[in-house]
Amino acid sequence: MSEQTLPTTGRAWHLEARPVGWPTPLEFALREVSIAAPGPGQILVANEFLSVDPYMRGRMSDKKSYIEPYEVGEPLDGPAVGRVLASNAEGFAVGDHVMHALGWRDYAVLDAATAQKVDQNLAPLSAYLGVLGLPGLTAYIGLTRFAQVQQGDTVFVSGAAGAVGSMAGQIAKLQGAARVIGSAGSDDKVKLLVEEYGYDAAFNYKNGPVAEQLAQAAPDGIDVFFDNVGGEHLEAAIGALKLHARIVLSGMVSQYNDEKVVGPRNLWNLSVTRSKILAFMFNEELDLQPDFIREVGGWAATGKLQFRETVFDGLDNTLDAFLAMMRGENVGKMVVRL
Ligand code: NAP
Image (cartoon, rainbow, N blue to C red; front, top):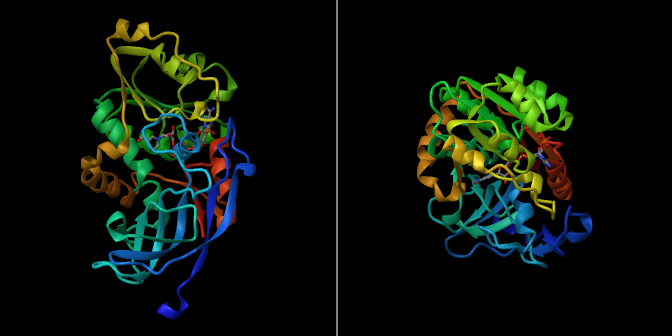
């Protein structure tokens, strides 16, 4: 694209008001924005894939968190992959593909230092938002650094058919777990866990109490719980711990829209079993990224890791994609294709 045909306007999703409980379209607006020419050290990117993630729900509130809230009246942001349309930065050429943090919009002008080049010959572009991106990395960090999966472990993963969860179960198995159990919110997802992702057992948490279904799937208890969900799942897992077990808190998606938070009532079982609860945020563990790219990238390239995506088309459908993901309508990573 020549300089003359560079876009001068684009569209970006804005937060209009802070949602209470489940977000509704009333709290968001897709507005026209002007696009400046890239300044020194900057690039102009046409986004091709946008990520919608559960943590974004937290940023729509202004409660104390590990990350700054979105500002009311300002554009939302998040992971995206796009093509460089214009570059004023050394090392970035027109046509390069980059991953960056200015999603929820069609065009982005950003400091090239905050972007990472990606190669679509190595993996499809959307994979850099899923298996090779933040969700895959989160699963890898949680299991490698925190759960420290041992040969023979029984591992339980909640949210097991989602972007992080589907990676966590498979990676645990590749790291030597003897038995991997997953929970998800539909019978179709449960089937997928066992038939495609290699889970040894799986259950639909909507079909009955989690504690009862977990006891059936893991009669001898669990060594590791990789938790994406919190609430009832966390209490059930604490009740099923073996001696010296590890619970890794990846997230608590069951509570992100719920003003009333359900806490586990059986924490004493951590003492009884001398177990640990470990929490982490992927962005503080980025030293593991080279190992992640080598190991997980290798498994993905050789077909040892299966990954799926749910794709919504068009910037207009970004909010719908986000809400659908929060409702569980995704299998694997939810992305928006522009
Ligand atoms: P995802 O699992 O692909 O999508 C969200 C899923 O949450 C939905 O598909 C839905 O699946 C499930 N869900 C929604 N409401 C639920 C409820 N009430 N109870 C149980 N499950 C519910 O999302 P993701 O990107 O992979 O994120 C998964 C978790 O990882 C989130 O908690 C996120 O915050 C966390 N995370 C943590 C880090 C970190 O650094 N610690 C980084 C990234 C993500 P069902 O159909 O199974 O209900």
